[in-house]
Length: 97
Image 1 (tube, rainbow, N blue to C red):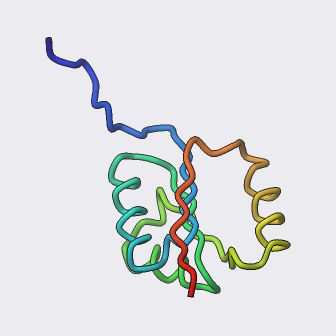
Image 2: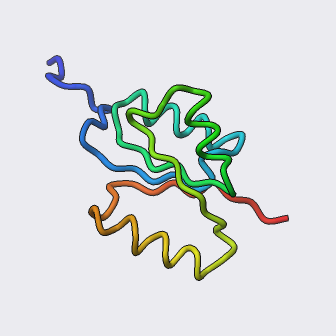
């Protein structure tokens, strides 16, 4: 029996990728975008915006500035972006130094 749809299709899904502008995060963002997800790519300072612009992902990926080590900033980020709806998926690409 052949499936009638692609089980990996993310059309209409909102995915947040924290640390999405980093080395591994960029691959995660690119794969989610290739599967038609609406991706919120969060990174330090303007790194996410630079990455999204360089890759030409502006139609499907929205960059955001976020320092996950700053709990106040994370709270504001969640409150601001969750107003558009709770994400269908969350990927956290951070590391401890």
